[in-house]
Image (cartoon, rainbow, N blue to C red; front, side, top):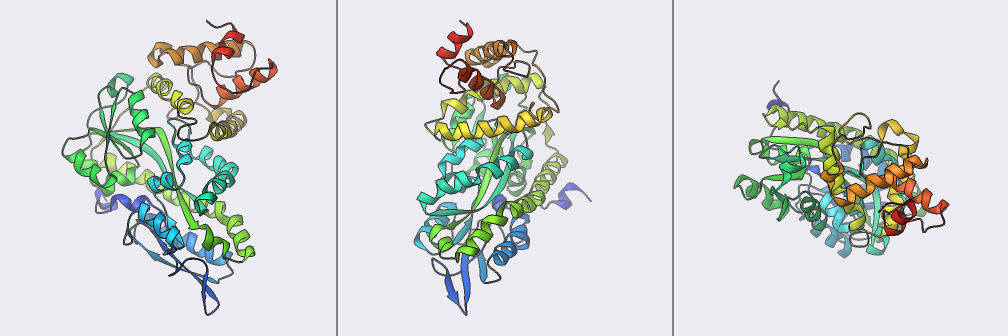
Length: 427
């Protein structure tokens, strides 16, 4: 069977989004001693994510509520987009909603920290962060009247383009269709590319009309919009991870008996893992289908990826205090440093199988990269930094700097700053 036969292109773009179901009014409404929730989603009813929601998440929620929760769903965006879903949650018209990546960022803007370029190397790190940080995002959602029922994935996005994008030079002047706001805008600017801000629904037409040259998106979106006929290349570097939160209104959740609330919290990560195993396989299958349709894989070298990482990872620190608190970035980096210290073989390049020192000069990444390489080299000589210097200020570099700063009585920021450079004797 051909790739086209296995993956019908009639799938719509919004089948990315996982969802639930529910009842007619806000709060826990009982009828015949049963609680009824109504939920809403953009996901078409019979497409992968929605199927997995019905097979895995709905039964888990019902079981957590001892069989007393009845869930009904509105699929395919019948009740509107994610922004409308969040409004309906607030107004009590629905009790829960499955959000896309964009809806997740809207519900909790600080989630932008998870979408930083080259922050995460794979799903093992994603799952580790989920275990460590689901409570953090619970606390961030509560003031907004929301409860995190489960942390699902939109997944790792690829770079789809009408021309080959492999080297840093290739990105110059490329017009990226963009709907993720300032995080995307600044990412593309750091690559000397340009963001073309658009409504998500306007992007397919803009790409077909030549108003944009590229997009960062998951494979299922490309197949669903049939844009595999427009794009010539896909760069599968793990440039960005995007979560997809599954939320309830806080009033509805707190109206449940306390034991039901505890039961839901106790099983949510296990059920998310079961769900995501299937959803992640689907993303791989759709990427294979896209290549089967004739889209060619770009093949950047390890040096090319290091160049791009050098350019983009300074955004982690530049955006702290603007899109998310510095303390949240610190929490993420601390957890990732713990993970990579315990799993050193998994801490290398996002597309490479092992860590390696780049042979490309640091000038490819600019002044900041040159500073980072000097800091890494000096810390390595002092026994603080375990890896080859590469000019990428990632979690292990952050941990090494922080440890050095503590030992020297400096403020432990984990950042490359003037005080650190002076202490290390770097001009």
